[in-house]
Length: 116
Image (cartoon, rainbow, N blue to C red; front, side, top):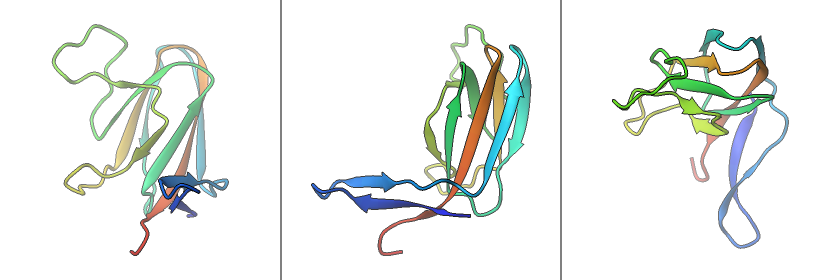
């Protein structure tokens, strides 16, 4: 799996130097469909792109598109996510719910931090 490099830009600010992933999964989904994606071994980041709106949650079921006020709602159209929580507990699944018919792409990258 290719590494998602975190490198300084011309101002010294950390930035991503992205090349095409060598591990990409795609789903063609109808509105209301859901899927559980198993995160591949060695993945440190997931990059998402879609042709329509979708919700996702890590390691727990993603609820349908509804009013949710207890903190358990899905995240709308994430872009890039680290695949470990703040305690470095690795996520193992991504639960996806399609709000509308769409194609969803998930590109995985290994993580490498400068000096590690």
